Length: 167
Image 1 (tube, rainbow, N blue to C red):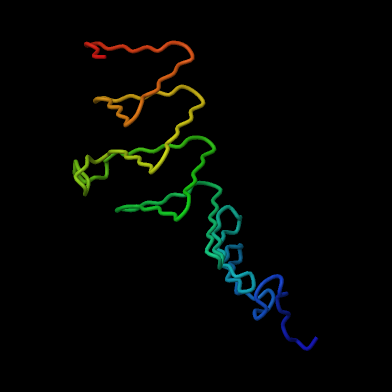
Image 2 (cartoon, rainbow, N blue to C red; image 1 turned 60 degrees about the vertical axis):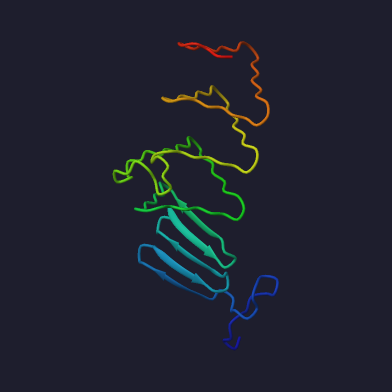
């Protein structure tokens, strides 16, 4: 060989970039930052492989942590996707709007009460539950539909009011 570098096969990527061209910064214990030209990615990882982040040239970012990932901001946190947002938990999903960081404000920037939870969908909303469902409110419960209400039970329907019932 004349010492010239091997280049990537046309079927594997950019033929103008030498095969296995990269810069790696690695500590003696194995923590590393990898800038890989021929694979067209950036990788940052710890020595044990228990946390890492990989960024590819096609715009994909993968993050892995053996333990928790925590994100904190003193202002708003916004997530936006041109397509879907998918969430799945191996155990529980907990969402809470506590208003504890509202700095004494009882309303948000739009005049709505702080600590509220607002869900909106442009089309159908479906909730599927594998066990009991309980809805509790300390105020009034309003159910309004533009069409019909359908309540079906395989057994009994129970409606109880401590005060008068208007039907």
